[in-house]
Length: 99
Image 1 (tube, helix red, strand yellow):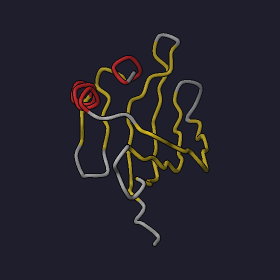
Image 2 (cartoon, rainbow, N blue to C red):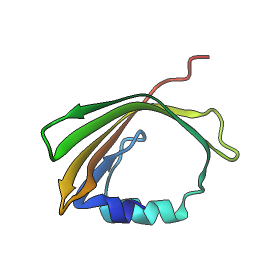
Image 3 (cartoon, helix red, strand yellow):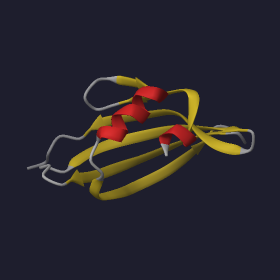
């Protein structure tokens, strides 16, 4: 999925403090177990013109055997290329467990 949607120079800034380029994202997700559950709330779009937008939301997800649930503020920067929306930047800011 990300191999198709990310721009060639796209970057993901992940909650564990690493920055992944497109190929590293593809390789790492081939090895990762799928999310068992996920939920997106408080989504909002910030338009930056006709061909660029930012999606900001809270994401909660859990993989089998993973506790606690991963919760983060997330933002995705999209740009339109050749008529298709492509992901240029994705960023996670973890929200500490509220327990």
